[in-house]
Amino acid sequence: MKNVFYKLVVFVPQTHLEQVRIAVCNAGAGHAYRQAGKIGNYDNCAFMTSGVGTFKPLEGAKPFQGSIGKLERVGEARLEVTVAKDILDKVIEAVKMVHPYEEPVYDIYKLENV
Image (cartoon, rainbow, N blue to C red; front, top):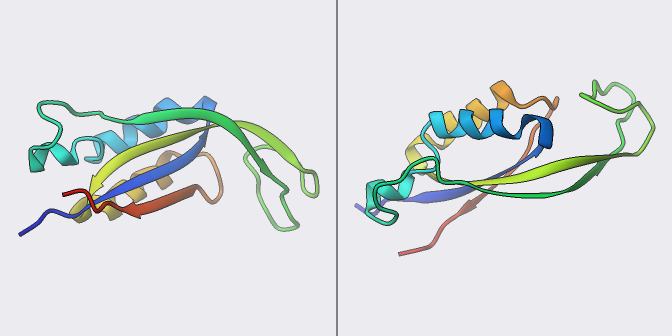
């Protein structure tokens, strides 16, 4: 049976990047390919880039930072890790447990690599 893998991309404030990276790796992300023989003897494999995220909290929101009705610009990181299908839910839960945002922003891409 072919292993199925996903790329999980999480956007996180720079101040919490290491905490989120550790949580997803401890949950099993970042070494999924090792099981398929693709990376070799490595774990904690992740890619991180910096950027600026924008948002405007609306009435009823409980923002980690910023004020209701005011556009915010925040230094954030894009954290990317590879995750095996069978642990994807566990890894997403790990993100939610440590991420400071009320609603963490993340994307999931199915990998088609052979």
